[in-house]
Length: 399
Image 1 (cartoon, rainbow, N blue to C red):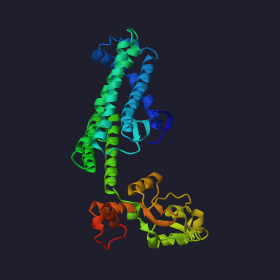
Image 2 (cartoon, rainbow, N blue to C red):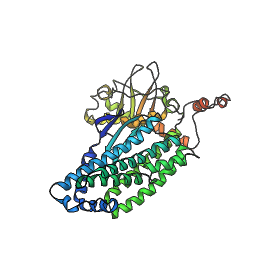
Image 3 (tube, rainbow, N blue to C red):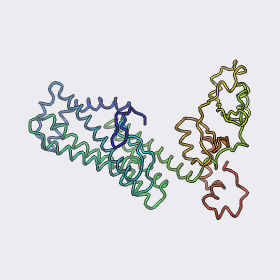
Image 4 (tube, rainbow, N blue to C red):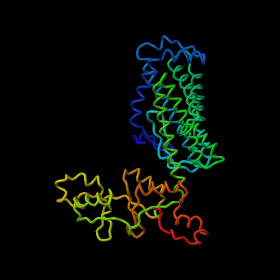
């Protein structure tokens, strides 16, 4: 998730997503406009003795709203540091912590698959939130009588952080409780299977949360939508990662001898004609045996049809090429395709030679075959050398 970096703590960048700049004043307004009801709740639950009428004069409600909203997001930030510091202790890198519309998000470079590690990383956040609530309650007790705005802010944040901890422990994957559920399920079954089951439970909770939100709070509807999409996405990514375990680009790529290529001198008209006949939407561009670019249908579309005979591939191709090596993990290749928004990656060996091309279609075809029990012969030989020694006619890449 992108955002503006505002600082670092424990070496972790802290970012603000643009949606945070929208939700902060909204929360401040909602709290400020409901300050009397909040004060009544704090009085009833904590015996604060706050003079409700004194909080409704002038700008006091809005200052209370702003302080409470800032305090809430500070608690969310501490919550995410709870996750992050435990993850760092286990050796996982944290790319950043981002505050956004629905709270906070710790962006892991790699998610844990060991169930014990995931369990403790997941529960660290709610435990930290309870700790923040306890600290706020201590400040509430230490605040002198008569400072009603401070009593309200500290009392409200004490309750809110405990509620945040409890809410996060709902088994709605990928919330903290859902990750705890996955960790417990993964004790006796594969991580991918545990993820699928936890994601299904998360979708059910998202549906129920959405129904409740329709009749009470539209913010819950938005949260339910996020939970459903995130659960589906992470389940899909975990399934892909499990399927592509030990699979390298060399196993799934189209090798150099089977590649259709074009030269720099090919006209755009000729290129479009080849695309129609050969059913390809992208070609490596070679100068002799050297790779000099990639050209796609999107590049060709930039040239008007009447001018395509006058333009050559060299004038429209992409020269800044992202590439992989034959021993790159298939999952890493898929991540690069998604990250850079491209459909194919050249495969370059240690000597800088083009040895193949891997596309999104190659990877998805391989995934579908692997899901039915098929594995590349080269992978079988790598993982099970004793079986590979028996000999196989199918020694080529998975196509």
